[in-house]
Image 1 (cartoon, rainbow, N blue to C red):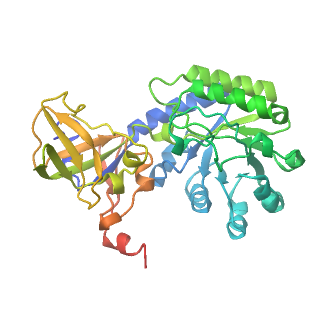
Image 2 (spheres, rainbow, N blue to C red; image 1 turned 90 degrees about the horizontal axis):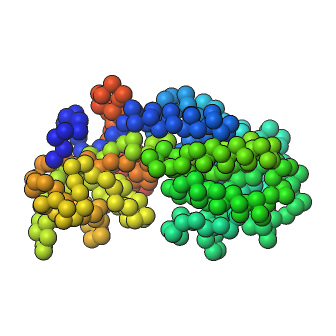
Image 3 (cartoon, rainbow, N blue to C red; image 1 turned 180 degrees about the horizontal axis):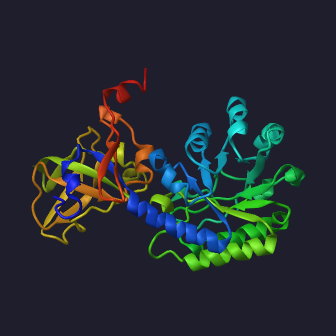
Length: 380
């Protein structure tokens, strides 16, 4: 179906993720400009994008990486230059023994976890932080709202123990998901209202992720002002740790039409899967952009795009096209670099997509190919 995007895509073994190096660099240049003008540090949140073949490109622009646990921390230390920051709702003693050797900052989710592990961090020169919860919801998706009622993430003001202030170097909050700077402004007001009296005692404050800085309508000037004003007011170093903003619209998923059925409407069965290869489509929910398509009914021919798994609801969405789809057509979804690769799975024995790279010179190279052993080796 795609005839004008990149002819090399038509020759790919599908399904395949394709990371776009030029688009990634465009995002990174924006982020470097922001951090230079705001005087803050920006870290790669590996939970969104951990294709380490591109870390040598990314670490030229950013200050380090963040991890959600031991394995991401190891990857950050091994493959990325700069600082390694770690946050998890809880750590085992065994994990902490290794983390203190490879981490620069470790953030704890509760006062109890902080007290258990702080001595070990101090003995190894690790900067210690505590995650706070300002109880300020600015989004509609409860599954992604760390400030929702009964959230397990961060210490609320009611549970804040002033006796631990001497144990911590910094505070961390993370409340946003794919949001603009106005929501950060709202969050900062809540943070200052509840925790402002403690901030000047800190060395650093981490504003977390969810900042859609590289999106076309993002208010970068407001973000820069907010960070500069916060730094000046409290005398602290500020960190941002976006994941999506780094690889936003910097990757694709190429898939082939395998069959077309008509059960009251045209349904194209693809060799990819929402459940296996783009889980946010079902979890968010999220309708990924698709080249040469439009909303249902906008173009002449409308199809429901689905998968070859046995899950009845494994549907990507309804799309319309100028011409009829044919078996063998290649479709290319946009914005498939973030979260898709890190969340994919082999449900139903579905093969994992290849991981390819569209270089800034316009060549497509295979970075990683998967086979039966990757499925078999997971469970026994």
